[in-house]
Image 1: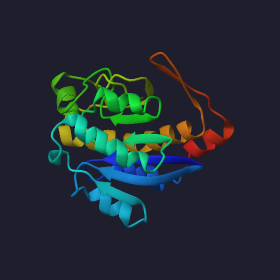
Image 2: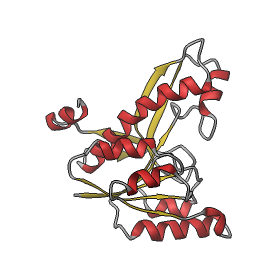
Image 3: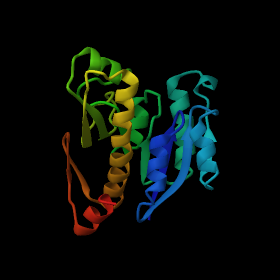
Length: 208
């Protein structure tokens, strides 16, 4: 059984997708946030998942907040920490602490459009494809080894909001898959590349 801790900043729809996937041999130990008003905390608490919020504004600097969040995370002895809409840039020390067991979902086809406002930037750039990326986290923002990507078409009528909704539907499928692959030991990191070893059981889970 793999212990998972999920970090969110808002409603946590990707966190919900992971929880509802009921991934074999995965236990969601806690959902944590930097925002005490994050709607996802109430959703998780209603399902008897431990929750906590640490307001980053209560800490003197980013390093102090990251140290406090790491201490809270470590209470649950995580095998994997999932950033599911956690809107904080992490210090290199935090990234190193969870190296190889910290993943993030980003709403663009990296390396295109790291950072914020990805959908607006994709539209402004005239992209015909947009999407999302799941990757291992490193100290360099949105640049870690890529686990999976999913693409959607960009329509002439799209706004940032309509494109975001279409990408989000893909995120909700890919993130549980990535967590399942990690938990089953199917992911191997080699440099900046991640290979996935699939089995018949894995394919059956992913097709559900």
